[in-house]
Image (cartoon, rainbow, N blue to C red; front, side, top):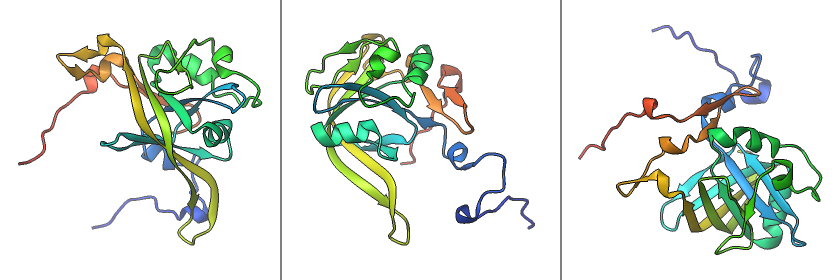
Length: 206
């Protein structure tokens, strides 16, 4: 059978208008990470390389491509908070992505309200319907298959406190679509919104 497929080796370039890697691995959940420096300066930044990695204990992680303020802050304090990015908060989330100096508070830039954590000293975003308070468990510098270090760090954290808007809990279950979460797509500006119309169910074979 003849295959009509575009093939490329990433090390030699993709030959397309935009790198397809991010678009293929997607849509991707957004790591909207709150942290603060050792001196207490607040930081809030979205990361598109983010996901959950373990059930018990619950562990989430994000990758800092380059040494960003979030990485530096978490190294200093050992704490961070993940906030759910939703469609109503999309513009605020985008404003918090600005490349600002370390002494700039992105909560203020994005006109968002910090609320003190219950288990950590880092505040969460009051306007976000879901937040995870996290204690850093590991920070790993990534390496290539050849063993060369890459200037990207994977930050993993154990979720030790969870905040959920009661309106998102239906008969004891969390309603994913009701929160209108947004996800990062490919290209320079593509996002997707999770909606109930896209829901389908499959149960595991027994």
